[in-house]
Length: 638
Image (cartoon, rainbow, N blue to C red):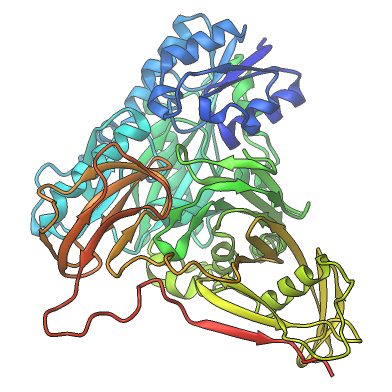
């Protein structure tokens, strides 16, 4: 009987496993890097062991340190979570050799399936060895791990070597294994998977299908169960192939078999020998706890002959600290507030006030809704996300809400190219037009009322905000009646709540301030100084770091004075376990290069300058960062 479990992972999945352990009366042990010393999963565990260092390679990927931590803390079992060492057969063997219980499949099964190249051979498939123009487009893919890391679509043969090198570097950083392979890339397919669960007595459950087609950078964003519109015949085929894969390697525990569905045909992708990020939608539909079942199987318990019946529909959205409108750039900073309505399940590894750093995945939380119908689940989740309080760095919340309400998705016609087609329409500025006014009125309330109203009109107060990349200017003053706007009646104006009456309809605005950042309902504003710094803008052609990170590579031969073409990759930043390419914005000459491999940079740091002025043309009059200004004036005092 297991009495104490160490989770060889961090963040959301560690907290998720701990929740099941607490309910079962099992003692919990966390491991943590120096960057995670005060993380939520550390605070929630009964005991915690430090892994010295901050990068995954120094900490969570060190099998020897994790096994030692389990022994030192008196744990008798290890749960790997997902990512890091979860699909590492050597780690599973090390856990077993130490006399600990491994809550996962046998090392031999991991070895057979965790490498996508070996898994394909086992299923009678093989990756491409030589790539020609006729094979394009192709997909470069990491042999180990998952989560979209180490994956690249290649549409031009000349780009293959560069993308292979980038994929190897990213895979090595994320999984400690730089092996990659190439396979045909199927356009317009749906990503569908089958959850399986097997015991040591020969029983294999198939726990429905999941659709995970909405992806960015090959990483899932929205998942649902069951996958809509498959038909019973195709569903039965997926079940048969999944059971075949499990039995081929004598599988034990929870796993997922993934497919690409195109033209009604199932193409095997891989088998993930671990729990998936999206497992909560299966739990909701089948009314089970997959982590509890994993533990029971590891203790030798037998599954029932058949799983419980499925009921209703569930959908999950991954909330990321990232800016979808800016190349999905990950964001860092303090998460001041994260709260969603109780109608949905929230799995998170962060608490209010926690710091989002650069070393790990930018996922903040998973929100899950379950309802009797698919339409009901989509409506519940989109509504809950819309009303959620998320104060801190930029997130993909607005993108999630719009995605869940997009006709192509609501009608079940989506595929893996959804965001390639619709990203521009899903990421327009989301600002409520009255948000700057509400922010200004809330700020005005916070000042002393003494001397606020005068008999003679004075110059209006001015506040400026940056909203969705645009500057908004608000003019206001106190009157005999208080604060009122032109055409808008101010019903209430407190420091944290403003109520406006617009065309006879009252609108409530919750206002929260965190330094220069102001949150008005779901709109995020940045308060600008009254007198802007004239030196704040950089010269035209300046390339700024879109996120904090480490410079991992600089293009070969790149130096000051070199001519570059628009779109040419100049350097690569690594942040949150992903590589981010910085390319030349236009044809021109590199006039400055301020970084070298290994250098740490902060967000907004000047990386390089490309002078794209063309002889004979007038120089650019304004810097690239110049933005239009919108003005919102309040009513003058009588």
